Length: 339
Image (cartoon, rainbow, N blue to C red; front, top):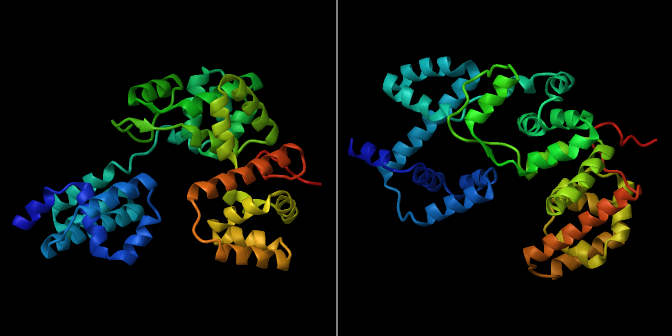
């Protein structure tokens, strides 16, 4: 009983750190691959502050984690009611409710769930006469493909304004979300969480723009450059990242290899994924590829900042070649068909 009480006094972060320690370095390393950088930093700091995990505490934490994993699996099989019934038989009514309550906060259906199941054309008809801020809020909750199609069909004069509002959107209170949904005369499929909900942001508008055709993208970015040059530049940087080179055709990759200075290519390859290396090496002559591999082997450690700068310069070159019509980056909207 004393052990259970001490475990209950632990924070979620402390339990997570102890769980990682208990699982061992190999398993923990695999879990790290699925975490965000800030989560890794917080978790690593917490792990560093733990000197020893008591065997009994370790057993309780592993058991709690096991129950949560089982509950999540039961929910995916048959819903919350099914999970509750199975867990009550396994661990008792009180413990089952505690487990379910810990999971329900992550099971809330996002606002505008009904819209994500609707046709983009129907949504467009539903929202096109609303205020740009209302449209931006709704688009930020849709799937990127849906939002991109709808943004493409909005009047050009409105596209840049809506895109900018998505990009600068931070947190929206549940009261405002509810008000918008009432205006649109729709019902939520689940109760809106009482917590503030994250939506929008630069990453959101990048996802949306990746789903529009090239002409619409250019119109929006041109408008943003006038309204907010810094925001436009930030969006451009994220529109195509170095790792996306694998999506280009061989002719485009060969053109890039010819244009990129050797020093930049060497630095970029140093920290590139194996998939990117393979694609680039396959589009080089055998001699060139071998030279790069030899230089990479003997160049020693390099600063991550230098690698990122080199990759950014290559991405800038790729965008210039695309703007000049010399290479094609596949996008949504059907305008990038090559004949």
